[in-house]
Length: 91
Image 1 (spheres, one colour):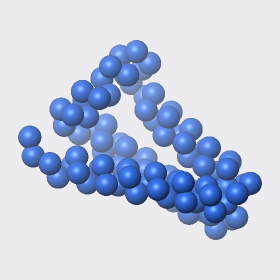
Image 2: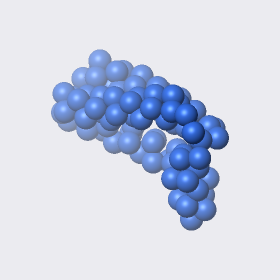
Image 3: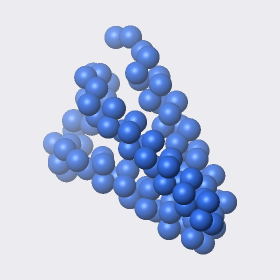
Image 4: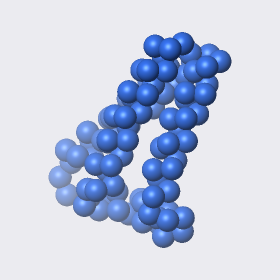
């Protein structure tokens, strides 16, 4: 269980780094997706959501470490694919 918590925490650091790069990019697609939410709930609401996902995964890991590791791992993989696609595409 401890190894799963450490792995989830490290993946969470990577997810926060990708999230910050998303938010600081001037990509019009990102701005179009985030602006309506940021106008309603504040500019940092997406960081709160990212944090809640990390805390939720770590809480699930205390009960079922394998399920939490697989689910957060899938989330991290999809996040990485989206990050690489957004950062590599040309407008």
